[in-house]
Amino acid sequence: MNQDLWDKILQFDLDAQPGEYVFSIRLARENNWTQNFAQGAILEYRKFMYLAAVYDLMVSPSPVVDVVWHQHLIFTQSYQAFCNLLGKQIQHIPSTHHKTDFEKFRQAGERTASLYEENFGPQPRAFWGYEDMYGSLNLGPGRYKIGNTIWIGMLAFIVLVIPFYLLFRPVYVTIGNPDFIYGYLVLILATFGVLELFNRQKLKEITDQFDKESFIFNLQPYELLYLKDQNLSSVINGVVNELIHNQTVVANTDNTVELTENDAADSFEQQQVVETIRSLGRPSYPNVIKAVAFKPVFQNMTGAMDGFKKHFRQSNPFGNLFNLNFAVLSVVMMLGTGRLVTGVLRDKPVILIFFVLFILLMVMVVFLARLSGQMGKQIIPNYYRKTILPGMQTEGNWQWRYFLVGTAALSASFLPIVNYVNSSSSSSSDSSVSDSGSSCGSSCGSSCGGCGSD
Image (cartoon, rainbow, N blue to C red; front, side, top):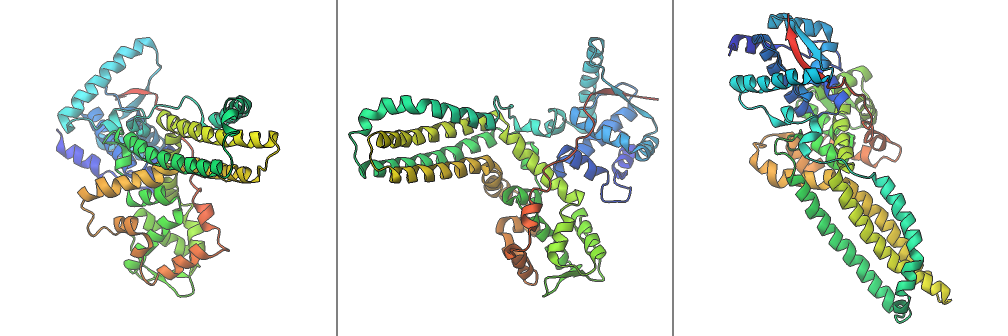
């Protein structure tokens, strides 16, 4: 291995250009990648380019590495400087998907794997074994959209009401009130209880099927915090608190913040907060949250976590679980509806059963909506608490402590401002910030077959 060249490749700064939308931030933003996954993909790109520079044979990137390559090609000056460092002009050769190219690219892929292992060891599956970041979750696409399932279920419910009533009418007329109501309430509570336990177990089983090298097991504390709380202001609070602890920012009693003479920033997130406060002077803290929330580095966080939630909700395992819950609860609702129809046709009082059904419908909506977010809000955070964090060196890491204990980790001088923001009815920061990363662009497609060099 040419250690001197490899050291130079590692030292090459892809984020050298000034601004808040540098290479790594743009790469993560446009692909909804987590911070660690983006950095890992960049490292694999460096390794790939080393192989392309050292060997006079065609090598081929993985789809993930190819995305990084496409992104770097857009930064033309940086890419040219990188090729100068490599001592070769590395050419991007796109695949035409023609059958005559298939064998050539297949051989290039096998050659790349062999040369990679010779120089760096086994290829990480997360970056070389899947088409994209989400491939490591091993979740197949859902057969039907959840929205379509709900509409079909509602139509089926309407169609089956009368047959269901006719089937169970002999039973309904033999059970009087309040016995039916009491029994029905017990059935409802038992159904929700059993479904809750079943869902937790099933979601945990799905999590256990994720590749252990998957990005979901390598999240930053703030990414995990947003995934759990769905509130970007909680993340911003953490970053500002770190700046207060470093004596870079001062929290004032009038709910404003300002910079000290020490403008040190230990991360890109902190840097963006510092620059925002500097541009605003001595701003009120709610205004800081509003301004910082739309910085690309924070948008990356929301985009990656919201992207994971969307991918999971559209997967086949979750679709099957949702459909099962919907079907079971619909049957319970049908039992009560049949009783309601029986009462109406027999001219009996139905106000109580109507009220119970209305409440049941509302609880069903909340329960199913909660199920849609349970993986991110409960299952993954609990997995970190019980499985991942105990094996990590987290002592002294304030961010992980903040994830575990929440606002109890905030500085005493800052906590009143956070409480003020959270309780202020006039501030819409929390509601607007939490969804600010729901949309993003996409980078170039992964259609590269390999590369050549001059």
